[in-house]
Length: 90
Image (cartoon, rainbow, N blue to C red):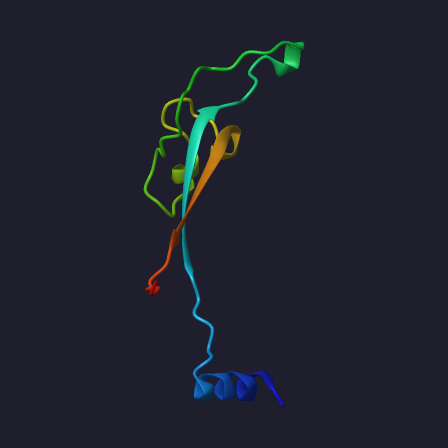
């Protein structure tokens, strides 16, 4: 019995599992690029949050308008929200 037949049987029985939708928000915070690494020191530029310098989908969208660093130098912060569309009876 293949996966398609298993799915059809569970839907016919009314036991199909509902999928929960996860909404993920990604924010890029302060820049962590060490500008003095070449001379053995530690110095950051003080950029507090990533701001894209171009439209989404372009190469410029990956560069920060404030510090001109790539987005990967900024601390990534992920917030996951659970969006449950099903109702539970209590």
